[in-house]
Length: 289
Image (tube, rainbow, N blue to C red; front, side):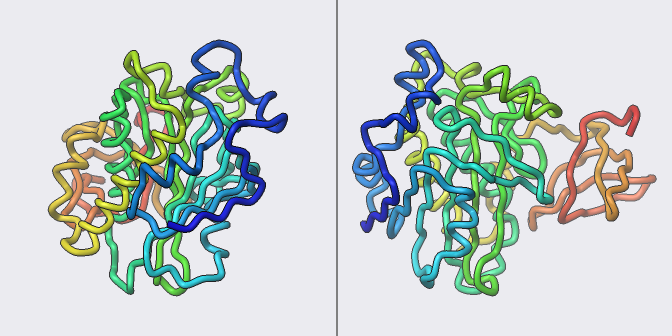
């Protein structure tokens, strides 16, 4: 495996000292990435790890990478300064109290329908195995049982659909300052809902990235239909749930949730008619839509 580290600090430096929250949890959990250990944990799952101690956006790093991706490549950082979410929204992150990375995955021209949902499944599964009971809100927001946002996923195409840049951001801790910046929907950190043992950032990144590569391989080879059940295992939505969906132009409409299709489309009833929607967002409550 190849490593490329720009400004990498494996044991910590003054750049990180101010980011660590007080208390033993932060000092053991929110630690700088250990690249050597990360490579050992990932094995042959990725071709290389591209690391920057601080970067504007790992998705931008992946999209701007000047090499043809023939195998998965991981782009990681300890601090992201200009991240973005879906529809160009700003992604708030808090240095070592967040886990931010992008997997560049070659598609070889395959359609990869459902890749965004698969990224959510892979992340939720890996978090669950680590003792974090994360759930999925359509299409791929990571939430807890109270529907507080734990993280999000942004999938973008690179090079005429020859590869996907799959950016994942997770709140490890959610300070009052971070919650204030995020606003609505309310945020939470995985430390709040985890079991007695939490893996450090390096272990967690390796577990998610490895599961993501495996599931994307399955999607590319077999399609999304065989993965629908795994998404339903983690979704917070239930058939018959009253929701609000965003339509073209930002218009919101009340709808009733019924599930997802074999192609990864949202199935819902709007104005008495069943519809399949490939791209939308779900808003929780019909009142005041």
